[in-house]
Image (cartoon, rainbow, N blue to C red; front, side, top):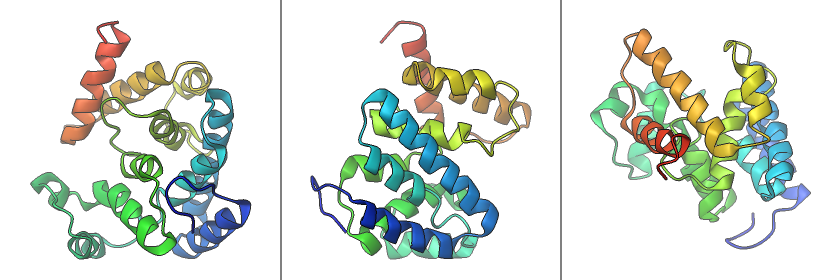
Length: 202
């Protein structure tokens, strides 16, 4: 696989796709394919690297279907420091684990691409264009159907990345609060940042 600052090719994507297909069941791979092509379309609209968007889309959930115990073992293997919240909710670390996996198995060293994989679930303050694309594509891809506001979010995704990130984070935190579930600290920080952007304070 290519190193930092080199260009990904269609052949590279085929290798990643083949591995992803083996690591996922049919439903998860359908979601992954949806994220890949949504991200590619958004990359075209926003001037981002289309190949990197596809690679991040293919890799973002590549370890999601491992067990919680396996995720914690992988975190130890990769030398990750995890919080008490993450230890209690190992699903939240599948993004960082996928980034480590992408670096180890495919030799990917492009930090923006790895960050896009890492933060696709939680988001973070001041995300790059590619990070925003993957964060949003994961939420709006065609197989998603649980959120009534999705048609509007899908429209906004091709117009204003910052606003779409705010809308998604606002919706997610409201849902978690209503369900009396804990919120990951990075998601809270991301929400506060994009709320400031939304209100014109940044």
